[in-house]
Length: 222
Image 1 (cartoon, one colour):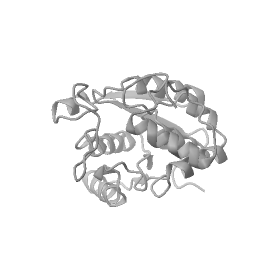
Image 2 (cartoon, helix red, strand yellow):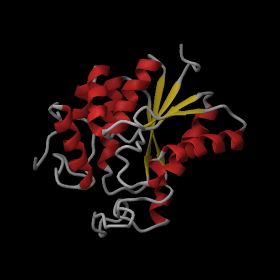
Image 3 (cartoon, one colour):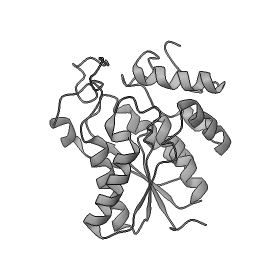
């Protein structure tokens, strides 16, 4: 039995957040809301896809304007002139400092206002792509901080935290919503069909290959 009557999913429209939505609907049937964030991302199309998946799932969807994030740092996800790359000993150029901190903080406020006690986010330490704000200790710290800040008892659930991308695919298959992946968006370049060669596409394709499952998403290059 769930401890709260309703859940909120931080929803980018990517593979991981779509899987979290399927899990949340299993845990809280008919009682899930979603929120996406416009932070000036070069793959802005993910918000259009998030809206489509939310419609498929029959859940409320809203977008919060957090475009100020793109003014705070230089990175490849908010500045298309910066090359998407990973160098030895450095954070990936796609790392957006503070992104998940802002997302969780905003999501926590929305949850507090709506008396929602559980927030889902698709962060994953196993395949975290070098992003420090996808680690379990960061999420635990955030949960404690937002609860101290608002005198709440919010639970942040991360059902994918210890899963590989292949295990995430298998999980989605078991949840019965593999078809939702067709409308999900992963490509950092913002292409549909997906480019198939950026780090996000490569990681996704690797997961499907290891799971032995065909990705329903269309690609330019596979």
